[in-house]
Length: 522
Picture (cartoon, rainbow, N blue to C red):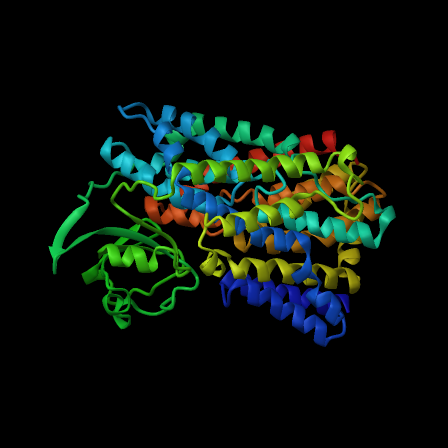
């Protein structure tokens, strides 16, 4: 049975790496195979869909959308970017700590979607290279996400798996993570990572500048046309179709001018044999109707035009949004204190409780469009997370996780715990670069749990290691959605990420293996 699970997992890994289908349906297919083989019960297949961590991730998408629509992030970045020229390093120093702080509490993608076009416009106006700023922007969001429980969906997934495992085996020494617990290591990594980028990005990042385009390109039929940049998402209907076979103008009412991918720019006359790919950046000539109709479309990871717009939300509603966000963060942190336990019998004032309350208030207050709330949730991520719980359970039920752990422990020496902690970190980080971070965490979790049992040590160092490693995606643009977005906006090559990202991956791994046992002893 363990051999069967191993073969299926290898096939799933190949499918994920080759992007045969979306990650959610790939992992769900694996769960169904294990159901048919009798390795999983129907209950175990659907348990992930009712997990508090998965539902918390879904609600955090809506909270992040409310903050995005408030215009608060645009205002904040406007104050950070200097009105007069200054060095790139100084701009990085002003930008990165604040971006990391924001990303510790909000979904990373909307932060990058808002900031990347603004940074690019600022760089063009000041005649500096945007390529010196956009990868640091993405890396800052990743570093910030390591610091809190809600900083990234993977932390919540691992938290949920830990709670389920602790409930199944109360003597395992396993428990969930508190709101700021990861910050003990995450904050140090964020500071060191930021310092590394400040010191070495000048030498490791490319310097490419684009000519600035005027907002209004031309007029047609009384409507002003302007340049719009969109980053294609996996749900764009023409993915893997030739550009020449898809009439973009007829479908979306915009003219396709350029397609950018991996540092290459294809103009219209070069696109005859080019296929649309997930993560491509398209430069369009469009009008206000395009922004109105497709600005919130799930077909595009980002839609940004060349104009600087004022936020439409009123000042009172903006302040109300800040108060709600602060309530969620403060409430979740205070609610975990021992003094708060048992104040109201039958109620637990955790992150799940407060994100539910804040989401409902935001919906009724009109902070995000409640009638269209399903558009702002990334359903594939949720299916991936829910299926990951089932895959993890199958690895445990079949004995595959235990067999791998026994083999790994047998190869280690007297310093086995530290060696295996480094191995778990490396494998999780490698899987993250090749597929999704949630899938990587799901594969690493049961093996880490079995390793801890064989070594007779606490599983917590391994669990924390998975959280950090699954977020440490700096080497490739495909490992993290924010990397994919800035790759298109900055027209980076694949090699640009390797040059600056590989040393950072090694730094994060070294710090983690050294620091994690200090705060979570074996």
